[in-house]
Amino acid sequence: MIRNLQSISSKVSIRPFSRASILYKISDIRLTLYSKPNCGLCEEAKEIIQEDILSQEKFKRYKVKLKIVNIDDLKNKKWWIKYCFDVPVLHIENESKKGQLERVFHKMDEKEILDKIEKMR
Image 1 (cartoon, rainbow, N blue to C red):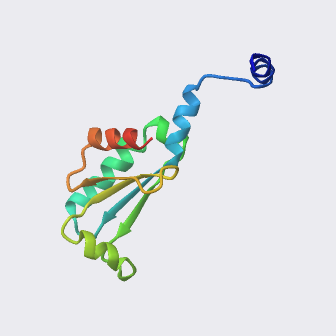
Image 2 (image 1 turned 135 degrees about the horizontal axis):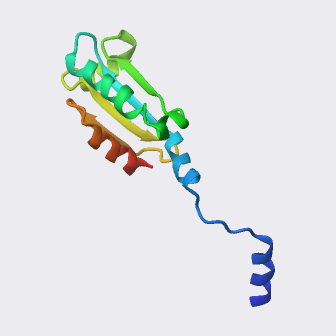
């Protein structure tokens, strides 16, 4: 048994996680902002996300994008029904963790968003 483990361990390269591999998980993050026209909080939310969060090097490097969904558009009726009185709403999802979702409602706070992104990594 020990001899088998030794032969396996000599063939397997074990490396600790690097900072790059940890940051790589950021590329799995998907941000979706549910918004509508003539909404001051929605405009403020877009600004905070695009200028304060996505402009940070770790997000730029891994090309994390913000998808904006106009809930007033007829094709987005499902989201209008769900969020018509709650916009802006930010969904934070991780592609590798299907089914898990973090939300930020109304007033966007940079620290809260960053904490929830970290939680989803």
